[in-house]
Length: 315
Image 1: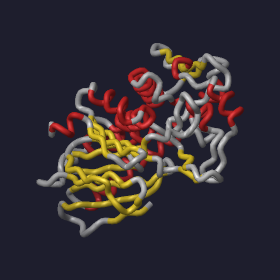
Image 2: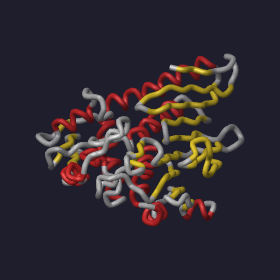
Image 3: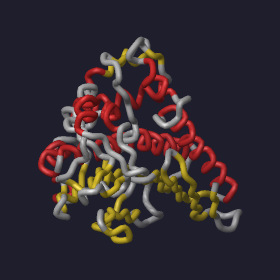
């Protein structure tokens, strides 16, 4: 675990970094001294570890893996954190009419982005019959999960990191921290400002890793970006095969390269960035423009920028 800090015994900026949930985790905060900053970093990073232990589909011993194995046969009791994320996922699925659907994993598990493998049309067709968030039954009273179809699988990759960022930020606010930036991959929370100045947050150019498409001054907000450059390979036809799949086709979405959502909490912005990516620029902006306190920046397949009404009006 990397810890980078300056001289102790006076308030200053401290920066920490490590990896969790298969992504880099970075924290910058203004703290009284090095001891306080390091103790908080350990607590924040522990939140990411706990979320991964509960919600990773890659860990056989995770709660989510237990749900994937057993929920088609019987109701599976789950912890409050997992139920909270599943409930939010359901809400975003309903809001987006299924553009966000964690049961996409029923096809998604057939892709191997490291090895550059994708399923054939027959396998996709078979898996599509299992993708439907309405077949994930949540019992609020018993706090259980049941699947109505065998073979249905869940993947929380489009929402769990945002939840972990929110949990880490609760640690910081509970400790009285007033200025901080916490990020995990494409998900970020900003606490306050940068002591008199806004945080400057860049949206990456989808085709130039070290270039920013736009830089925004932000304070006290959450921001999440989904891009077709995060996990992908180029197939033998020269097509980009990336990890953001359409629940209706089981194939990567092609009309958008990047979606950035700004809102109050990272769990919501994380899920909405995927939903808007699947919906595309026109329908995605229509969704965001109907939501209070949420904005979007969309970069389409032609590298054109689209902004939600709140950003255009400067509200």
